Each structure stands twice: as C-alpha cells, then as structure tokens.
Image 1 (cartoon, rainbow, N blue to C red):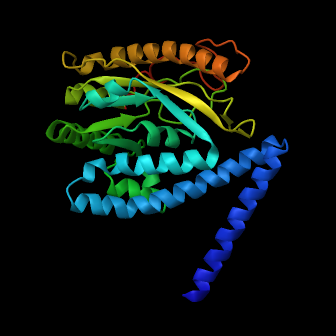
Image 2: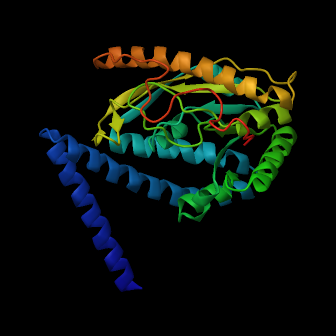
Length: 308
C-alpha cells in the first residue's frame, strides 16, 4: 500500500510540475503551452471535485438534500476550475433561473468547457441528462450516478423513452428541473451557430407540462478552441431567456417547439457573441446562420423522422 501511495505522490508532483512549467512557457508567449497547461489544470480540478462529489452526494442523500447534489458540487467545481484556468462565466437572468421551477433548461453545447459553465450557473433542484457511456467513467460517472443524472442511451429508443418518462414523473412529483444540451454533442464552432436540435428535451417538457427555459452562452472560441489549440483566460457571458410555456402543447407540437426555441437561441447567440467579443477587444467576425464549421443549423434533426 505504501508503494502505491508513493507512486501516486510522484505522479501528482510530476503532473503539477509539468502543468506549472507549461504555464510558465505560456506567459512568455507560447499559445500551445497555455492550451495544454489549462487542459491539465482542468482535468486535475475535474478529478478532485468529482471525487469529492461522490462523498458529498452520499452525505446529502443521507440528510435529505440529495436533489441539490449537482448544485452544491457544481459550485465547488466552478470555483476550483475557474481559479485553475482563469475563465469566468457571468450570468444575466439569474432571477429566471431561480424563479422557474420545475423547468427543462436547454443550452448550447460548444466544448468541454461547458462543464465549468454548468458549475457556475446550475440551479438548485436540477439534474443534467448525459449519454449513458459517461456512467462508466471513474469518478465522473460515479458522481453523476449518485447525484441523479438522467442517463440516455441514444442507440436504444425504447430505453431513451423510458428514461424521459421517469424524468417527467420525477419533475412532476418533486418539482425537479432538468438541464439538457439539445444539440446532443459538442459543436466546437469557431463562429456563433447551433447544431440542429434533437427533440428529446421538447418531448420531455410537453410530457411534464413544464416550460422550456433557453440558456445561451456566447461563442467563446477566442477563449477556447480545440481546433486551434487555444485555451486562455477570459470572461464569457451567459444569458437566460424568458421561459417558453408548454402546458397548452401536445406531442404534435414538438417539432415546432424545437424549431422556435432554436431560432430564439440562435438570434440571442449572435447578439451575445458580438457584444462579448467587442468587450474583449476581439476582432468582430461575420456571423450568420450558416456560419458553423460542421453543420447548418436547421432547428430540427437532420433525419426528419427521428423523435429522439
């Protein structure tokens, strides 16, 4: 056992030394060094906080506050990772975030940095949805399982429907909200744009008779770009938009609801990104609805027949 602890200590010290060395090179002008320094720092923060989150989730469940696990641990992660990488998210519309419950919160998904965004803005009595494969990842998967994450198997429509049915029942019974990235994957867009939305979030909102609350994060490729190996400090604005009611809608309205939400979020994304880049002194890029790098944003699934 002592040998294992010794190896772990050496590994940790080597990891920290490498991270600090890369940070040093970044300060003398190496963008690539800065990218890897912040990447290593964020991984360390993620492992540390999710390890803490496993025990915190167990404790909060025992004392009757299990549904606040993701909120509580998220705040700790936002502090730790934000300090480690020098990135901060600012929030406009906090009163909507706090005052709308239960709800289906939907946000644009740009990169792994969105984990920090969630830690910063995540409301109480809310859970995330995630692909089922994340459940098997040590520390992160353990924490997500213990804290009430709704896991979705996108390869199996029957189990995906069952997961959303369970989430809808939980929302009605305990006034529990859910946060979903309706794009279904990270876009890594260099310009403000959205991938087509999958319809699961909108099925869930209509089924549970709760509002859709759009959460828009400005495009932050000037702060983090995986394609260009850029990861620098910065301030990224987030805006919570007015809730979209669904109590009068039926399953036949899912496609229209997804499209309308997509349009509202894309319009705000363009404005929020222009403002953020102007304030950061970044050269304004021409943004359009076709400005993404990997797909045009149509507001609905590429496969019209798909329902999840």
